[in-house]
Length: 81
Length: 81
Image (cartoon, rainbow over all chains, first blue to last red; front, side, top):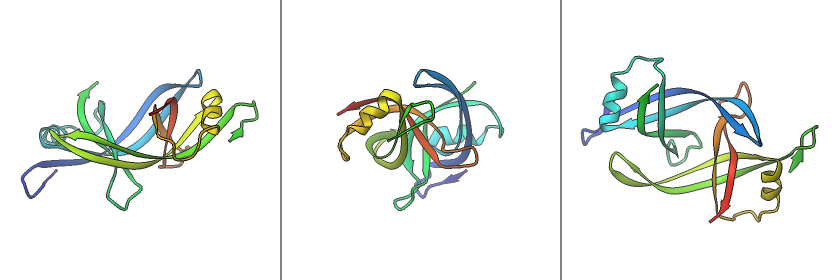
C-alpha cells in the first residue's frame, strides 16, 4: 500500500476472476486476470487482507494511464464471499 | 463478421468507452478502449451498425484466449444511446 501526497491510501493488486456466464443462451466458464486499485478506506481493507482470499468486487474499468491500453478495475465495493 | 463452423455469427469490434464515475467520493472522467465480441443475433445487429455510433453495452469480461492476458467484453445486451 502507498499513500498519495494528499495522504490517501492506494492499494494496487491483482485479481484472478472466475465465474459462469451466459452467452447467446449457453452457459460458459469465464476467467481473467485484472489489475485493480482501491483508494482510501477500501485500500486499508485490501491492505489487511490475506492474499488468495475470495472476494466479490464492483467498480469501473479505466485505462491504467493516459497513454496505456492496459485496463485497471477501480474498486468501489468489496465483499468477502 | 464471420461465422463459426456451426453457423453462428460472430462480430468482433472495438469500443471506445467514456463515462463519469465516482471513486472515493469524487467524480472523475473515465475512458478506455476494449475489444468486444457479440454472437448470433447480437452479432447481426452489430454488423448492421455504422462505425462510431454511440451504444450502451452490458456483458462480461473474459480473456481473449487461454494463454492471453488481453480482455474481451462479451456483449449480452446492446442499446443505442
